[in-house]
Image (cartoon, rainbow, N blue to C red):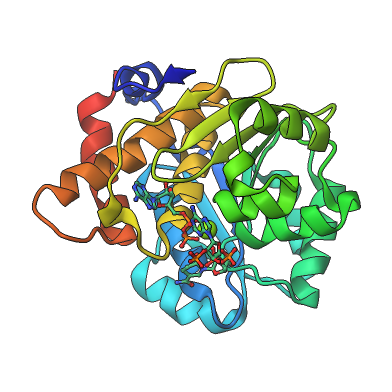
Length: 280
Ligand SMILES: NC(=O)C1=CN([C@@H]2O[C@H](COP(=O)(O)OP(=O)(O)OC[C@H]3O[C@@H](n4cnc5c(N)ncnc54)[C@H](OP(=O)(O)O)[C@@H]3O)[C@@H](O)[C@H]2O)[C@@H](O)CC1
Ligand SMILES: Nc1ncnc2c1ncn2[C@@H]1O[C@H](COP(=O)(O)OP(=O)(O)O)[C@@H](O)[C@H]1O
Ligand SMILES: [Mg+2]
């Protein structure tokens, strides 16, 4: 077991060259936000936006449009019923699917489209209800992504892996990751008060920081967006994921110094400052 340290941040976060434009910092699509869970996809999108992705689109239920644009006019909106979603997916570097997705029929259709259209050049991050779908229907497990990152909390991992929470040991977790994704490049971010990160070839990593002030709905949605932001800009690889996990908790710890509770949106708001500090 290795511990993620602060040194991962300057290793991953790069100073921006003057001669660059938004097209150099990645294109990301976030999919989720049913009628009742619009906040989840907005929080995920803010995690991506504030970690610096060049171009961000959100595919969600139309009821979420005003709230999304009132908070974040930088983000493009796509109605998740729109057939053009099929054409949009191949244009992306990274796709985050799941926050507030729900388990309705549109969500199911979207999962099917995604599984069929994802390519080896892309990173796919699956969170929340997207994990429910792949647990119930193995045909929805993406086969062709360049990298798949799954971000369950312990109960979501129990549902997907069939490993009950007390039995979620490192070796059982890696075995399950290999069983679920036998041929894919896959990373498991198993969230808890000390999140563990597993890949199929490296030793497990533990995140030593974070605090219980972060136990607020939307905290994981925000992390999924930050992982999307880091992989879109800094590459679809383990180090980008480790840096995203670490900076999410680092922001949480800085906020908890003077606050009893940490709001997920405040974590996102702190990212540009932290990234400026650690950029190398
Ligand atoms: N503002 C919004 O729009 C928000 C929308 N959201 C959306 O809601 C949807 C449902 O997601 P979900 O995570 O709330 O529900 P679910 O998957 O049933 O898990 C909860 C169950 O797991 C258990 N549990 C055990 N260990 C655990 C652990 N370490 N961490 C967490 N839970 C743990 C836990 O145990 P208990 O609390 O009973 O002790 C409970 O029985 C999803 O689409 C999501 O995106 C949220 O993101 C919030 C903000
Ligand atoms: N006690 C805690 N200490 C540190 N981090 C925590 C604690 N409780 C929750 N978190 C973090 O908050 C996030 C919760 O994720 P999740 O349950 O998916 O939230 P949501 O679905 O509400 O967005 C994870 O990143 C987890 O590590
Ligand atoms: Mg969650």
